[in-house]
Image 1: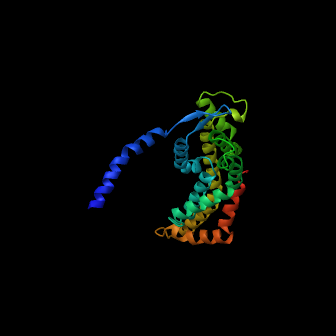
Image 2 (image 1 turned 135 degrees about the vertical axis):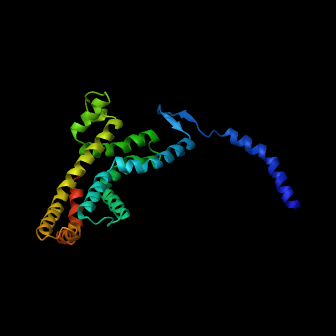
Image 3 (image 1 turned 135 degrees about the horizontal axis):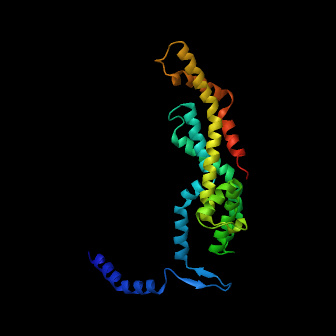
Length: 247
């Protein structure tokens, strides 16, 4: 009990000293640098880093190939008629790793030009952010239709852009997503047609045999699975999705 009282007394005595030391160290400060820019304190840099980490899932969906791959795989499952097989977790995992494979060159450029120099403290945070955006902008421009870009430019009142560098991210991101949705549904339509033909043939045969009470989906499912396995469907779909991106 005596030792506890001694520790409490020491803590009370040292509290003003700790408070004074804490007050003397600014948590958030911005100071002008020698190069003409601004040097941010470590607290601000950590805050910005945590904010960027919370935006990683949104960036994964909106700035990579993830959207197109996920939609195509979801349409494929619907065309096969296998309900929840493969499961949502498997489709998300396959979409994620295919996206990592497709976006590997873009990630490599962003690492060598932005993240690595920033870790080595050769460039500042703002320079690293601008350098990291460049490869992603080039990727999005390569997949974005000009008509979609002009549509959102007109909706935003930006007019005609002189070059790609003048296009802001608020215009590029919705244009890229709209183009990705359009491309994904085009691929899904072409992929859906063979399975739809099998369903129609099976339904016509059952109708001609008078077996109207039997579900055509129940009969056509084995034939669709057999067709998909014979053509090595998963490899074909993965190769089609990878080659559909011009990286």
